[in-house]
Length: 334
Image (cartoon, rainbow, N blue to C red; front, side, top):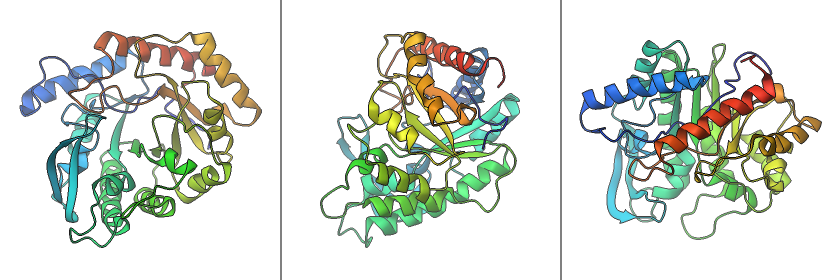
C-alpha cells in the first residue's frame, strides 16, 4: 500500500491537558484545542488531533454520546471509571465528527480522530442479566454506531481514524475465560464490522491499535487471523521494548499492509537513544517494506484526562524523538 499517505509522524490521539483547561467550558476547550494544533504543527507531526481535550478518557467519545450505558462508582486500577451496558446503545448524534471538522478548519495537516473499538467497549461493559443477550450482540450494535461515525468523519475531511482495542493483543495469546466474555472470534467480527467502509477516498486510513504492549509471546496463527479478519488499512503496534513478540507482530502482517510502530515508551520520562530505536527497526527490512510504515509513541499520553502518563515537557521530548526517528527512516520525504 506504499504511497504518499502514510502519515509518518503519528501519535495515538490523547495529549497532556493544559493546566487551565475547563472541560465543561466550550470556550476553554476550543482555545486549548487551537493551541494543541499549533503545538503539533511545531513538532512537525503529519497528523493533528484534538488531544482528547473535550473528553474524560479515550472511551468517552462513545460512552458520552450514546444511550444505554450507566456510569458506576467503581474505578479500575487503570484509572478508568467502570460503565455498564443496560440496553442496546443508540447514538444521539455525531460522536467526535464536530470536533474533527474544526481541526480541518485550523490546519492543512491531516486531522486524525481516535475512537474506542466496539469489541473493547462490549468486552468491558457487558454484564449478563441486564437485558442484552450477549457481549457479541452489544458489540454488533456498537460496531454499527462506530461505522456510521467513521463514514461521517471521512465526509468531514478526516483522513486518519484509529480504533483502540487495548485487549486484542492479549487475545492473540489466549481467549478470555468466564461467563459473558467476548471470544477472540467475536472480537474480530465486531471490530471488522466497524472498519468496513463502502468507499475510502484517496488518503484515508482506518487503523486499529490492538494493544499498548505486546504479549509475552505471539501465536503466529492467531496474529495472522487477526490481520486477515479485520480489514484495517493500518495497524498501530507496540514497538518500544525491543521484545521478540513485537517483531513477531510485524512479521505476521500481510504484505503491503500499513503499520505504525510505537517506538518510544509513553509511560516513562526517560528518553530513548535514537540509535537503540533504529537498531530495532533496521532488521524489519528483511521482511517488511518500511515504505508502508510510520512511527509514533507507544500509546496516548493521557488516555485518562486526570492521569497523564508524563508531564508536558517529557511529552514534548518524546514527540520530538518520534519526529527524529521518522527522519532517520525516511529522510524528509513525508
